[in-house]
Length: 390
Image 1 (cartoon, rainbow, N blue to C red):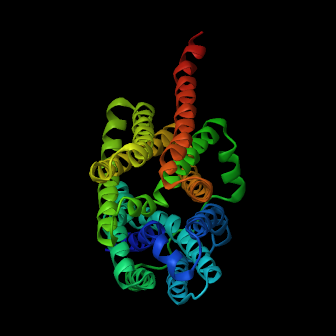
Image 2: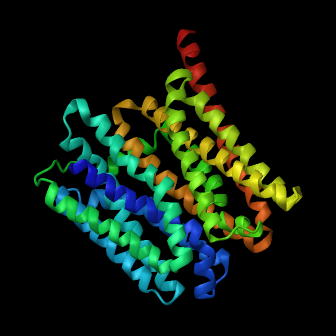
Image 3: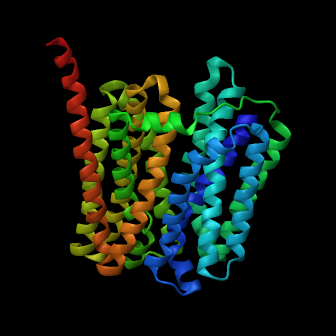
């Protein structure tokens, strides 16, 4: 039951992290700032998470895990209420940074606690249950939060997320035991793992993939509005993306086991490049009556390919350094959010100097770079046994 409350916390955090993509236009209009500037709500959150999460994990290493989770979730909840009350864009930016501090402290702790409280034969399922909170957030929380924000005002979405966080907090306070293991990797150990060539290469691939994907996803509501989608239809589009992401997550895992992580990751990146490029082609050249259903299909394709890649990438990292897999995956999470931050900035530049229809091919270029880096990595791994044999 305790793991279920950890999954609820992950659901709240995942909803807040990604729902902003559907709320940018209404926030921009209400606070009278440009869409490009509003997109920095994505950037500051992701950058704070990427940098803050490993530093906070080390700083609070000796704190009781239940107390730490309560502190992290309380910060997350308070920051959402602050966002709901924000009357200026600066205050909203600050609230997003505070949310990232709470989320960046909560998620790694939740995963560690799920392992600590589960029996050895159930640890894999405990981790899967916690991470399923993020997956369910993309399918349910994000489209519903977008619908709430567009019909009741964007502030209502932050209140909703705060309520979800409060439910998780109460559940953990009453359902989680004290005295759980407190050990975590030191900053020096993290840096040592990050400096290993194969891990550093893999982290760069994750950054490039996330940057390309979130150049588009962070501003997805902009081209949707260009095509004439209303608030309810934008929520439907996000539901389509989230459903595809959930399917891609399962498909990527199955294919990684069958054909290997690197071939699966390469397929995912290739599919993602095509989906993003065709989004730009659709917006530029296809008549509106055909562009609308085609664009929805490409959103599904993007979500399917992107998250099939990510699952395979995680499996690949575990295989590269199985002895330090926990540290490597923590670093990969930071790389993910660093890429999201870069994507938020890149999308803002596109909207400032180009057209919404240019988001797709711009993001696609970053994914092409990720694919090239992956193929280099794969070639090195395939040639390594030959060098040993020689």
